[in-house]
Length: 321
Image (cartoon, rainbow, N blue to C red; front, top):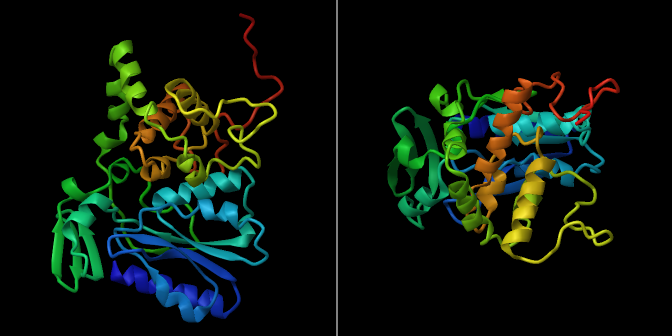
């Protein structure tokens, strides 16, 4: 994985030095050695700040929305799951293809942050990382630290349909993590679907009632691209701002339907939630339904495919019931 990091730096340096791009959005060292954070590089001499390792969990595609009016051209580092968000932003005409250069990484899998914090000493510096079938191996200044895939691999990685980017201008890494076919069958969603109604209601109530309405899920989501969000509107006030089970439930269900057909299962909403609400389960339920009802592929997996629920025809049948 050290090789991937060096390739990203070299390519970024060349793109900046030649003026092919004016900014690179990538990963940098975080607030401590168990985290990474977004960095925005505008000078070739600063590419040494770019890193890539099993702690690069976040989806950087959302920053393209925040920099959509940037006058120059942007290069962005994306993993397989993140690249689907690039496709959806292009399909929604939120970004222009000629204004971005995609630095794609065949992702070998990402490490759970809790496991990293528990095993990596505070004074250890990660110098190299590798992932194979035997697990994660982090070479640090304090020695080699290993994690098994079972204890360390993120759930979204186990259910990822495309660890290899579906769109890229420069591709790094020969092979990504290959999910077991059984993990791609939405078995987690099906198990909850089959539960009694009271059990399903209780399951979501216990999570929704502890929602803080901080909107971290919405703010981190590349699919939430409305100029004015319905949850911020005052006139008309479509959704109450109060924090209680009823309004919290309305917020999450409305948002889930708003991103239906556009959610790429990048997992950012669940990752940033301070209340640990299993938002991927809710979104994956809708992905599963759309796949079964419309035969639609995972959103963002094909630039040329017309996204389900994102187009209409004047001759569409209308129910008379």
